[in-house]
Every structure is written in C-alpha cells, then in structure tokens.
Image (cartoon, rainbow, N blue to C red; front, side, top):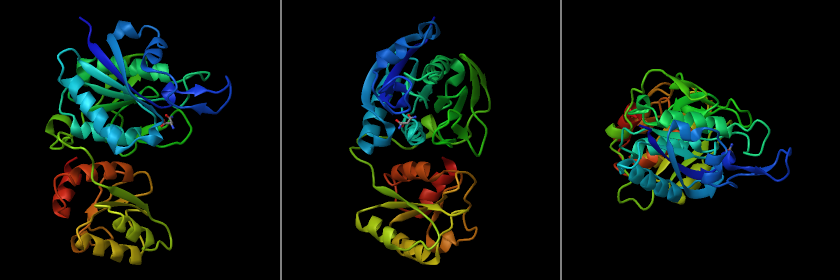
Length: 329
Ligand SMILES: NC(=O)C[C@H](N)C(=O)O
C-alpha cells in the first residue's frame, strides 16, 4: 500500500520560469504545485501524491507571517490520518531557516522533506524534478520517520539543523558543514546515515499554537572597525534579541562588545555566532560570556541562531535558559 504524500508549494526557483529560453534571468515562483508534480516522470509510482499552494514567492521574501501560516498548515497535514508524509517546495535562499523553524514547531514522526532547486524549471538540466523525486521517495519511506525536517537537493538529504547554503550560484550548494549528510539519494534510492542527536520534532518544547507574531531578532555582521551604531539602531527599533555574525569564533570590536553587554544587561538576549560559515562557537572562549551575559551559538550559524532565538524568546529572556536551548537544539 502506497504512502500518501502531500506536496505543499511556496514558490522559489524550483518553480521558476526564464523570461526567454536559454537566458540566465528568471522569475521565482512562476509555476504552481500541479505543474511541478506533472514535470516529474513516475512520481506517482513512489506515493499517492496530492498538492496545495500556500504562497508563491521567492524565498528572499519569506517572513514571520508566512512561517506561522506554513507551520500551522504543515501541522494540520501531519495530524491528519489522510497523509503519511509532507514535501515542501521552497526557494533556496532562506530554505535553511524555514526548515529549522519547522523542525522546531512540528511534533510528528511523519517525514517532512523540503525541496528546492538552483536552476529554474525551464532551464537546461533543471535540478528541481530530480530533487523532488528524491524528496517524495524520502517522504514515502518509513526510514525517514522521526528524523525531523530534511532538505533534498543534489542527491543528498540533510537535517534541517545542519544544512546551509554554501554557494550562491552552483548546484552543489547545500551541505551539512559541521557534520555529514543525513542520507545520500540516487533516483529515489536512499542510503540513510545516523539520526540527529538533538532536540526537534517530538522532543521540541517550541510551538506556534496561539502565536500571531514572533519576537524581533536582528542579525549584525561584524567587521574591522565595527561601531556601536547598528547595535543602537536595532535596540531602539525594538529588537528583543540580537545575533552577531562575529569575526572568527564569534568575536567583534571592543566597543561593540561593551555596548552589547549593556544591551544584555537591559534585557536584550545577545547570541554570538560566526560569519565564517562553519565551526563551533564555544562559551567563554576569547570572550567572557558569563560576565557579559551572552549566549554562544555552538554549531548554529547566524540565520539559524536567529530562528532558535525567536522561538526561545517566546519562552524566556534569561540568557542562561537560552544558552541551554542552544546547547540542546
Ligand atoms: N534557488 C533559489 O530558489 C533562489 C530564489 N531566490 C529563492 O530562494 O526563492
């Protein structure tokens, strides 16, 4: 008996159309969910497929409102006895954030696989159909159960928490930089590796139930001669949390550091991450986080740190408690 997989479409390059065949430029989110399904030969041999469109955007336009809408919709599908798994088509630009967000606010063991593409649907050797084929194969597999949200691109499946877009233009862009992939996929045949030993899904304490907005968290990028001006602007405009994309292991200039310690004292939660793209930010390494009341991001890059901090702030503004979340999730 075939698994029943619901495909939820949001737009992105996977649904993109070139203005003129053979041209580089294109519009994201031009095709709808049924057109994406119809473009993949034999997809209906993997599972009983149905689809729905939630939004039709380039993922650069993703926002908190769409996240809440999407999370509520995905939770409804997962809770329904009519479906065994979900596939979500999305743009690559903010895929890692949406995937991590959904992994923290869904609480089902049913497979959730996000899929995207680097080439528009009309391109020569478009990568979307192959990525979607692997995504549906994963979503239909009992071996994907309990693994949380997965990302399918370029013959690889990655855990939402670990994967990041490493290249702005090339097809081989998503990678689990601090760890290995969740699985390798080859035309729907999937070789699974170790499960993710972190909290997500069933064990996550976070939820979108009753939420109509998310706390504001801004990301600040560190650089030589970094001043306090953008820190002040973020706090003045209502940021409840700040993530610093620090130089190296989460460092920044002395003036920035001191101003952030003041902000932390005033109740803004400050997380130190890194602009390098990989590596682990440890507590009290070069910076005295205990004294300054900062949080160290561990393996989470700035974008994912922002997601976790937004959800953490729905529970607490205590940096010690937030640090525990960063250690566990
Ligand atoms: N490859 C892509 O999907 C990029 C596109 N800008 C998006 O994120 O929607």
